[in-house]
Image (cartoon, one colour):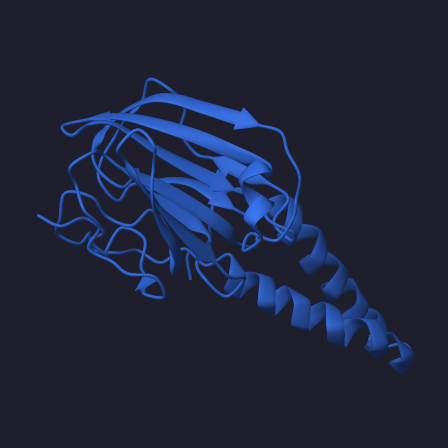
Length: 203
């Protein structure tokens, strides 16, 4: 099973502690009180940080995240924001919604309220801009109450392919994608999305 890049600081200490506790259980069964939950946590983290290979879907704009469409909002400048909520059970690796050049990757400090909260727009986040055939495309990775680290995989100035892995939000949260003016969404609130596969714009 392929694991996402950037998970070592979380996974390795947990797995090492679980292994050490399991070895100590051979000497004293009381260590099982620590070994069992630590082993379960390690297994859960392996599941959380899975990073399966995928065949990109067809469409001009693909979902950047696994999750559920939380909201679809018209923006004052004519764009449409699609907010995708990522639960801890989703794959946490985010993908480029379409091919283009990464023109900006900006980290913005903020809070850590739950991603479904209306104030989550002010959370810790990374704002992406892509120069594409459709013009400038903005995407925002937003940390939540559990997710405390966003890990970009590429920097500004890099050319990316559609559905290419571009970053990770540890333990889920939310990803917003802004459709350019004149492009309508092909998804609806409550619909599940798959990063790099689900088409989110109407042709």
